[in-house]
Length: 363
Image (cartoon, rainbow, N blue to C red; front, side, top):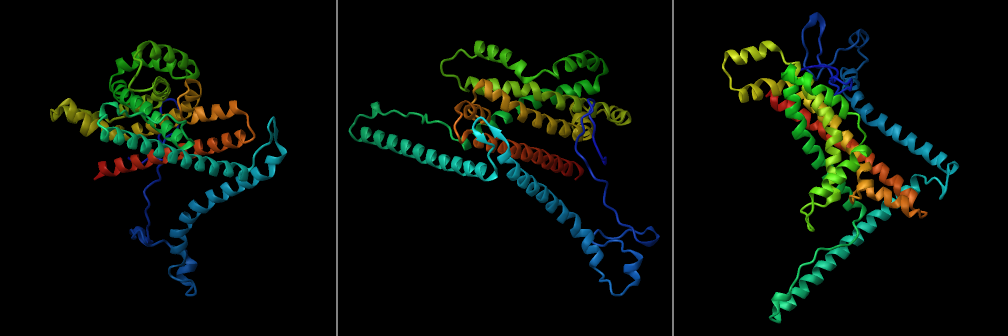
């Protein structure tokens, strides 16, 4: 399916796809992708090298795709460095790029120190248990879990695991429900008002409800998953499932009816129709919704972790804000940059998965 943009029912724009690249020579005959159409001057002028124009055509866009974003980043850093001393806060001047980078290095060093301390703890515990076994007192050996404060790197992985869990739950709910809504006009008419009501609700409104429900449900003194993790993941699920649901419904509703009629004529089972006809046609829409949902989930997660005190990036930002030391603002700014970079990488990951799924379907 070739399209420039995929739009969902709520107006969100999905993944851009470029039209297929095609080169034509004189008379409309096709040329190989490695060649390029040259201007009349390059064909008539012997001084122009035969590969000059084709070289610019092939290399130019790739170079621009790398150079232009780098130029934008450099300009942003320069403007930041020049304007930071002018912005005053309660803790002094706004930290510049150098101060923020220094705190990033400091956080990495703290992570290394925490890893060394953790390794020393488990080594001492293993030595103690071995000594008890040697002395014939193996029944007294105990294994304790290291309870040190999580480092910044540990909090990054906690946030990634939380958003992956919530996003996975949202996808498991949204994709089947979206397919049903797209294929059944009656079900869509009945369910659409609920979608429009619950879709705009803020995560801050969901959080107290989810907290009370989870606290009343998880009564075990030693639960398998921490309550703060479950609360954050459920809030992520409730806020991120709507883009996937809506786009999946749009994709299922846009399937050619003649294609479905062919499936009925061939007496395909419902599962075969779903696998061979419905999912391949709706796949671009589904991935568009999942891209949007993952971005929403990552944004929601930070706010949820701040209030639920799940030991992730949101809690790190909140703790540094409450700390109020001279380094706190620089650390918060470094965490904000890391949050943005991770969000960008997650979006690129979804694009790569969509491209891979599309290639597998075409083959």
